[in-house]
Length: 266
Image (cartoon, rainbow, N blue to C red; front, side):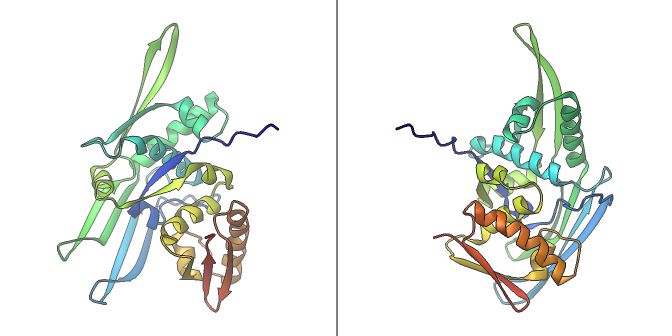
């Protein structure tokens, strides 16, 4: 009896602040070059803290394609996360396209390089969102700190190599264990856009839990979905949730008033 071999397990690292934040836009035709998101949280004393995230992106807000490219980069970065003072990762653009299971062509290479450039130019300002020794800290950093591209000879072939450098604030956060690991195979098995974003967000929320409850509009802001109409939000969520259930990421979901409850597979 022939048994089909299971694909090799692929994992990717998602830094905690990026995972919690609506960095990428999943609305087609979104031409905005900036966005502001605000939320309220409770500190250890039960006090309400107002946090604010400002995204400035002169080349346009990062898209669902940039979201995929970013997570592929973090897949390559994962094996070296425990090494001291390592902020850069090297790979070929062909390897990135292969990791994303997309065809590699001149047009695709151009789009990939544009993605690097867009993320390097994207600045994130987290206002009063970081905490250290009881202090509220505002921090500014780039989604990617830098990118370099160069060619080298391998036999008679020329190979294009990309070097991506992560921002020090992001790698410091990873060093402090503020990150989650996602199953990259499951991630790619989902349609690009909202389902993939929802998967990585729920991965953090399900830690040692069998269920997770959140306000419908609050979840929409965390993705983000630009509509504020509850019926439209539910349509987007239901479509994505069906894909997550198909992949065994969630067991089921239900609406409870203005909230949605996710039940995870035990």
